[in-house]
Length: 468
Image 1 (cartoon, one colour):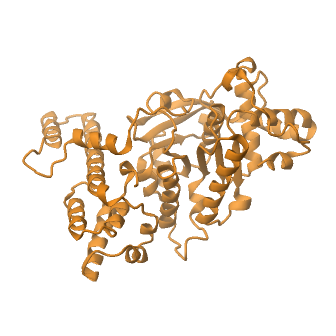
Image 2 (cartoon, one colour; image 1 turned 120 degrees about the vertical axis):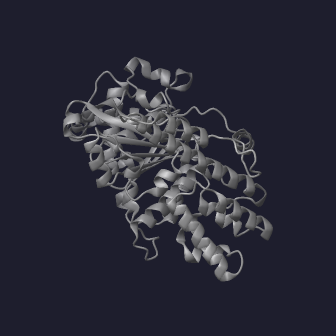
Image 3 (cartoon, one colour; image 1 turned 30 degrees about the horizontal axis):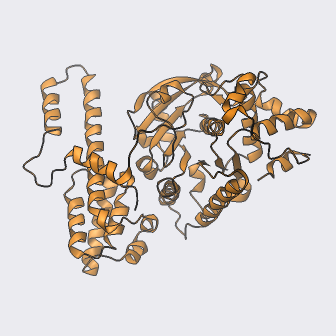
């Protein structure tokens, strides 16, 4: 069964097409039709489904749906006995989002001179008025109990970001979370993603990093520099790490082996092997890496990072579909399902649109959620959306702006906040910042784990990268 908290209208209608009871199918369709909180895209999807239903004179089959709209091919199937509950949860979540948007608009209205307080009070009263006379009214408390019953919801404690303003309101990356790190070119999106991978490694979490724009060698040396500033008394800039590869190989190898001896491991796949790859290729890589980690370290994959999403717009699975918007949404849903279905934590790095960036430039670095480039599924399916804004002036001063545009586990942070950065060390935020003497405390029982390369003769970077 799909996780009802994240169900989409495609999941619901695709599941309707498979139920054994025509009465149940019609009831679910009627529930969705009567909802007043669907967005424009969802209304269009529903109308297309109803037109197709009329055309075939009955509920369309799954095969028919897929033939008419490729998005159904990635839809999750909801078990028949849970479909009514999940449909109501979907509507309840949509209604909450609608109310949140209205309240946000009212909050903005309150900042304007001459606002009408009585009018706003009336809107609030109507917005949250009970509808006891409506037999279809969904009690929020009933839905909360149903969510706990279906999904065994517990308080979330994940891996933090090392950025105080984010860590105060977001519980961190955890199993089944689907996070989007967004920003325009040069905003340090990759830096934050690599930093977060490093924090996972410190906590014994294993990472698979898909880098579609930067080579794995480049990412690796960024990670090595980050390690030196976080866990040693001798911080070494990334550019000096690069030089060290040739002029001080012994020290270079020592930093690498120390990094790879952290409790958690990282595996890279870059554009040299992933260019124009299909979803089946990605699935195979994820399954293989998970198995190899279990075989070698008795613990499988925890976190999947894709950097960055817009590089997937044209791929060998697109079947002639050259609409980058649809292709990106399909890939987004593909990775989201690895979180909801398989339990991995997933992070997608995403570009913001030029229009979104230009808006942020004019509004003190403040992005809107709509600023994600071509990505309605990016914003819709995400557990959390973190936005970064920087320019040459801010980076030179050692600061960038951060926001939380979406947060399923708490409040958002629409007003940009600043955090420190040290680009020369690939560090964003506070990071870990341990002294060399404190590093042992990271490891369980105070013991350093065995180095997987200690019995190998390491001659160059290629052999280092060939360890997995």
